[in-house]
Amino acid sequence: MARQLDEQIAGRFPVGQRLRVLDVGMGQGTQALRLARLGHQVTGVEQDATMIAAAREALAAQPQGIRERVRLVQGDGRDTGVHFLPGGFDVVLCHGVLMYVEEPDPLLAGLARMLAPGGLLSLLVRNGDALALRPGLSGDWAGTLAAFDTTAYCNRLGLNVRADRLAGLTATLAGIAAPLHAWYGVRVFTDTAMDDTPIPDDLETLLAAEERAGRTDPYRGVAALLHLCGVRG
View (cartoon, rainbow, N blue to C red):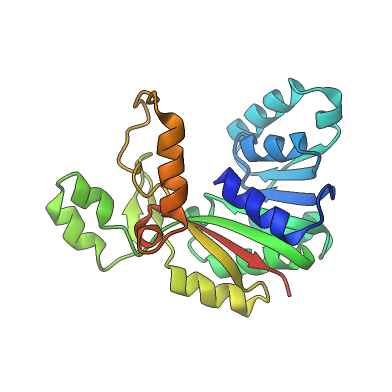
């Protein structure tokens, strides 16, 4: 996932350019801090008080130079127009957020307005075209049949959430003047692994296999997650 994002950034912007990054729904700030370490100016937005507290704690442990490149804002990603001026960012991230938003189109339109011309919108979403795979691979046949005709599912936290289909998001991105530039599959082979699964000794080989599958048809189309990159016209 990080390598895919880095690939798109490298393809869009001159080497060494300090980018203005907006990370909406940043969680504990893992991606925001990674980009700040690479020299970019990052603004993170997070609504959950526990998550933003964890992000602030992680940021406080960083060297001063990195702390100066990160701004944290507690707020709803749908209110970016309240906090920021249009066109103020080169990259906007929205990773693992859309599944919690019942009507994502207004959110996406607002994020696109935050992008400068040529800016990159990076989305990580649950793949609505592959919802039957997880229950199918775990032997839940009733759940498998039910998953074919819906974009609703229950996640590992026990929350009822929603998935997005590639065709629908492609149309949405075109409609908000940030058409799809590239897309990848994420967690093609490892979606059924439990959170407490030990890290394998051949981790690099596993990551290489996931990376290859994530950019190769037909494998990427059945990934648990989709990483979509749109470019502001």
